[in-house]
Length: 405
Ligand SMILES: [Zn+2]
Image (tube, rainbow, N blue to C red):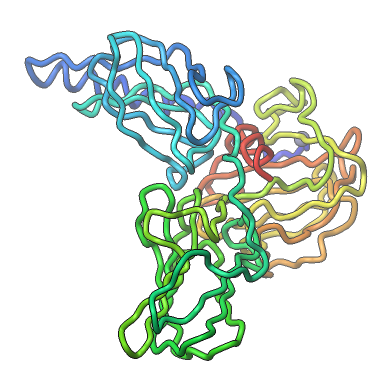
């Protein structure tokens, strides 16, 4: 879009890049200047997938990556940086094979984005080019109630469980629903645990007060842990039912993260139909008359359904000569504003409305200054859109969301 307000923030991309690249060299200058020990900053040159890969350039949870570079001997951590922000960063321990080579596994929960290597002394490489990480193979679906296999202790109830979906999004409605039914013996205490497959830790516990027999009960989860969003990755529900005589039945044993498992993602791709990211002119930062392009254009047939990539509060819903029908959503639990332009009709939502992840907010159009139907999509860091924040390149995030949506 074209807008005189937009030109005021030209060069924001350059600023963000500068910040990202400057940090590691500053750290190394400090350590070499402040003491007698010279701490080299690792440099990443090339990343390929070595084992258990989807292809040489496409990894997934469980793959092993090969990282080539320089000054790698002291590296002991590899961080998957995912899309914007640190909420989806995942770090694994690694050991350098030599000064020029490091191998590291891709944990469940790592998502497409740059990687960085960090030494024991805390010196960190600049981010690499994005590494494409496909979503893990989906867990076994168990949408309907099914009996828990295996023997159960005498006196313990029989358990049936089911989980509504194998893919869930933070702040979506409905959330992922875990259902259960007890029969055969009465239970006096119930516990439902949400287990992270990444490390087996219990991240949330429910203790339903009522323990009715032969009745289907359920709990729903929206990907939040208090006010914070849970880390993206694989989770599973585990039900424990104790009867009065102390015998205990479980829907899965500790260590089993297969049953009632699902993958949690932090954003959904906003266009729900075939689409493409256009040519170089569609990119963030390319020249426009009098300013630089502050978003990524994604082309799709006129009328293709558009959803909120992330839920939140509607900040603006307006018409503008260049942007056409547009809507700005303050991403819930994030520092980011999500901006959608050229909608074919005004969004049904109004300023102040609460929107949930994946909810329809409109359809792809070409209102305003647009050549061909497309979504012009922007991401702005805190404090927000034309409120002191700065736009950043949304394409890496869009690609990642697209890979799992
Ligand atoms: Zn555009």
